[in-house]
Amino acid sequence: MKEEVRQQGPRGGEAAVPGSQAHQELEQPHLRSKPSELQLDFEKLDGLLPAVVQDHHTKEVLMVGFMNREAWEKTLRTGLVTFWSRTRQTLWTKGETSGNHLRVVRLWTDCDRDTVLAEVEPKGPTCHTGARSCFYEEIVDA
Image 1 (tube, one colour):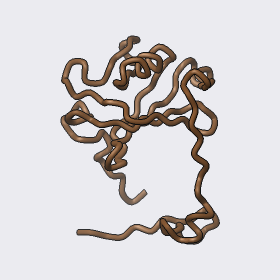
Image 2 (cartoon, rainbow, N blue to C red; image 1 turned 90 degrees about the vertical axis):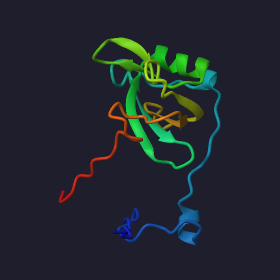
Image 3 (cartoon, rainbow, N blue to C red; image 1 turned 45 degrees about the horizontal axis):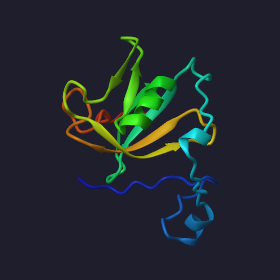
C-alpha cells in the first residue's frame, strides 16, 4: 500500500513543494566551515553531542548516537563515525566488531552547534539487529 503524506508548512498550510516558489523562499543558507573554526557546544549535555547518522545517498536516518570531544576528533581523523558509549563509558567506532562501518561523506552542525549530522556511506546494516536502519518501528495512532 502506498500513500501520499502531506506535511503542514510553517504557517499551518501545506508544506512547500520542492522547486516551487514557496519552497525557494524557505531555502536555508549553506555555510561551510572547517572543523578547526567550529566551536561545538559539548557543555549543553554534559560533554556530549547528539549525532544523527544519515545515509548520504537515500537520506534515510540510520541511527542516533552521542559524541564527546574525543569521539568527534577521532571521527574527523579517521573518516569513520565514532561515538561515546554512555553505558560502557568508552569510545566505539561503529563497525569495529561487525565490520559495518559508517564512512563519513559530509558533516553538518545545527544552528546552535550542539548537534551534528553525519552523512555516511554505510558498509552493511547499521542497526545491531541487522536492519539497515535503527528506525524501523512506526508509532501509529499517536
